[in-house]
Image 1 (spheres, one colour):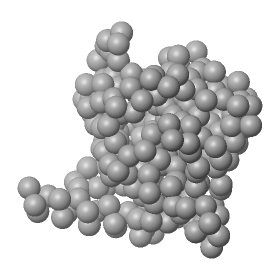
Image 2 (cartoon, helix red, strand yellow):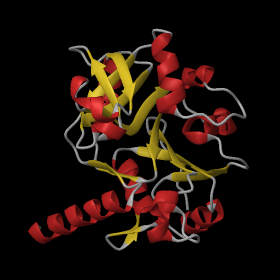
Image 3 (spheres, one colour):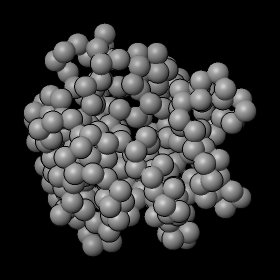
Length: 248
């Protein structure tokens, strides 16, 4: 299942603990959302493969709902990376789960959501992050659904000025530059996360860090990334990949 990682590799924490209730028509009650099929293999494999391609050879998968099935899948695969599983006993959100693995975290690490299909170049994002001495870097892009996303305002260098949660019909006055579910954070971010408490980066951690004047930057990218949390978005990803394969 694993291979020893090199000292200069990057670390990726994959969040795979959600219940995926909006995808239940596709997954039923027996398949965890990260294992939904996409182009002949589980979405989780696409996520892991992109991380490994970008030199993340130290990977921890944080699981929750049906986590035993994710662990079984990973054990039966041969990935060119060191992969460990952390199973939460109660829902802790995308941020709260980090305290369970605090002793295993590098000084900086990626947070990757297991229900997002993405081709973002993590190495370039890491270079951007380091060049700005950022406390946290969040991949941002132009969204086709800003009304239910986190809209952001940044300065010319990409530093966060403001973030607006799910602006709804008011989104035109804020714009359509939004966060994706891909983050690169320093371990000090744990100082803003309460232990044994369900917390999320977008709604709890990053707003608090921004208020504390921490250096949060947006890495603007046009690379493909799509939240597959709803059946509509899931089918959009399938349609795109099918079209790309036909052109190859």
